[in-house]
Length: 204
Image (cartoon, rainbow, N blue to C red; front, top):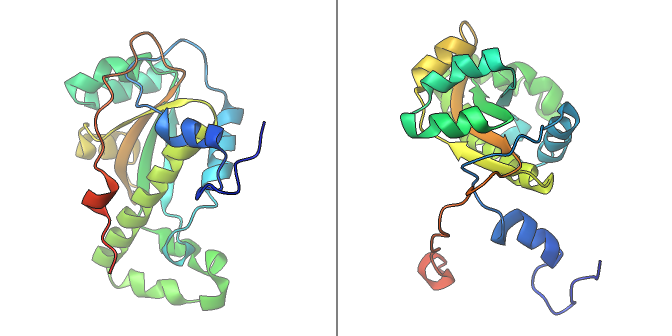
């Protein structure tokens, strides 16, 4: 593997840029090739280093692998997401832990006791967990791609029903459902356009 040119503004190797961003696609079908527990652990071990506010790390992940678990999840997906969820070897339910502050002193020891404010402000705790959990969901997608796998993120599901089915009695709020695996036949829709730099970036 050759090193990137010193003249490029990006330090990340071009092959990694392609893997993580330019050539990566949202898969809509999956092959039968399994996704191992070791791959899932490696994905988490990579994504956990990305930043969250006050190092809160509120994302919790439920891996749906067994046929029995799939039967519980698939009917709760929007109709257009059911077949692809059935075909994926692994589906991850990403949820925000609204009790994230219980780990505060361990994760932010130089500000010990700072999590106590969220005990008296559940709305703030929910907002904090959702925002930072969503950040971590983005990191999860990139880590899946870094493992050489395809991710199929879906917001189209019955959130209340998924919460009741998988997180009953817990302080977890589902954010996203992500199919993970090797792409199958006709996995991609036509590549959609992206906004250009001048349309998005303003320099003051």
